[in-house]
Length: 435
Image 1 (tube, rainbow, N blue to C red):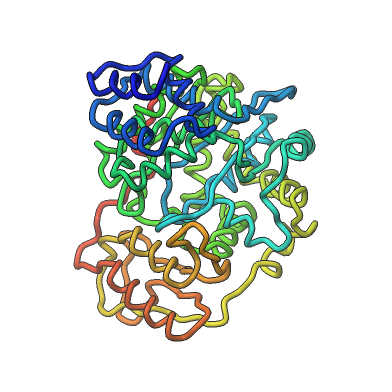
Image 2 (cartoon, rainbow, N blue to C red; image 1 turned 90 degrees about the vertical axis):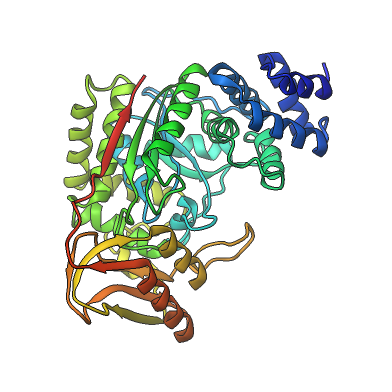
């Protein structure tokens, strides 16, 4: 077995066997496959495709190229993945709510890159929190609190890390097969029994149209199920930020408001929808709607907030964070309102542009090793359909410098459209895709 014969097979529009893909993934991980061969493989897959079985075989091969975690708990191990959006802090609400229901939730998460924020960056806006922990400590935290949100070690799906870097320079990032294997190889390395995929669609998502979101949702769910993990997908709306704040500390503040003050916000609704589907797939409830109602209950009665406090204390947060979160979160030195230039209704919000505004403020990354400022961002962002008067704030900018705040104000004005008539209220949940 060798790389050249596997690449030649793909060139002939034949799908390699599981053994061949496993060999290739190991070669990616240990250096037995050259960069040129990896690039040729990526392009061949991009051009010819793999089909559902081939995607599942590649996913399993890339998962098995490194450590695969194992668990021995008295409840189901379940997980959630989002394809990325703006103002999307669902994991911070959903993980403790699921744990409160008796599930175990090892969420291996990532950092922000581009216009979307990263879950780990948000958590690390809380003083003292460290998300880089070893497996033994992760297991203990899960036993103690039921949920943990941590970063991946270097040995989780190393084949994917290598292939991802190759894809970035070979114009193969957009391959649905490679996107699917990349996402799922890391998620399945945590050995969940059930997985829910939150596939975002809209101006603040990577998938801008419902058709593209549906293709990705089906590819991900079909592949994960073929790989042996019961998986459903939910297509959710990202035509505006899910929460009215962007930026790490500001988004944590919104999470705390949802769990302690405003449990009827869209962030809570999406968390309950995803949680319901996941609990049903894990066999904990007969239907997704029943599971959704239970998740709603634990968010509204404060149990999710209490569980979140325990989760955060286990990774270094202050013990009284939930009770005094506003005292602990960092604040920006410059605050600037962005006034509406005219009367009217909010007819469109470019979520991607708002996300990039936060990046320009220093709250996100343009390259992987950028250092971010957790205090900067946008808050009090108007919602689609809202009626505004001239001079009323469209958003509030949190910046480290006045010149940066003024530039951000211009970006916000360009990203928010005001028209005469209110648009139809957006649908938060577009579709469920179940096995």
